Picture 1 (spheres, rainbow, N blue to C red):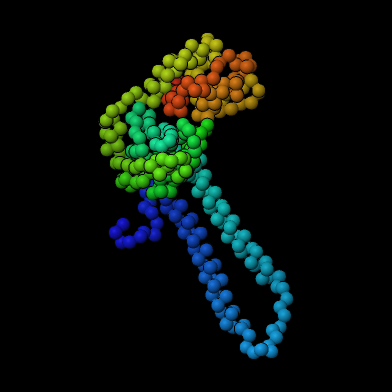
Picture 2: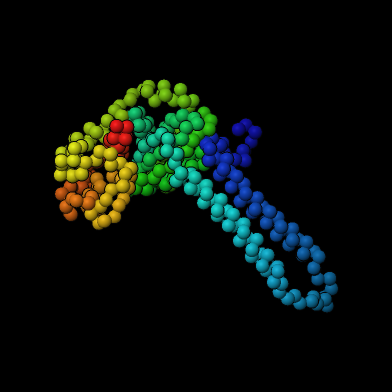
Length: 317
Ligand code: CUA
């Protein structure tokens, strides 16, 4: 970085090059047309300038081919930008590789709480291995934040009341800035940190070192029992609520006749607003009370991790 101002920020993810290519295309189109306009303006001003006081120029009539050209060419260019941008957006935010490692992120005024599946926690720091897809499941405890890693060309708003997921794959070890990119109160400018990309072996050592508390699953299971979820949602299905074994990621038939996939958002909604989606065969209104105010976003993520583990066990049987 000592050769003055770099043209682009450091690029350290599989998306970075693709985003830069699109950005370069946008700049190239803008520069080309700006130059074309300024040069034409200058040339025409000189070439068609008024040469004497009495000179009357010939009147100009419309030209259909010209009008078609200046409509179709820009349309084609913006359609390229649109399709290219949409493709990148879907790649970055929707096409999460199935083998991605999950990391849970909770934004709150004014810090990023991060928890790895094995329970290792960090604040304003994110450690990840190089060359492996990482999926972030993000929630906010209070207001809108935005998780931004410039070197990865990655930014996603974290909106209270819903989950945001993104994924990335880091391509080179190093330390990269992490920012909150949404004004979220007086401490917004302090809501920043570092992403450390490590070699896989080094990462494994880091992950199991330090103070590792309970794993996400274990914390979720403890919470599940502590809040009494287990008294109704019995594993054998004899409880007053549906068994939650093997439910995560599967379709659930609702009383309304609809079928929904039991994803993170569904589980969260069912904990906080049990009446929103009642499982077919159970009474409406539900006998389950809301857990709003009794459980933090992090607690919900832990319960989700536990329910995911119940689905994995079932699959491996
Ligand atoms: Cu959080 Cu700005």
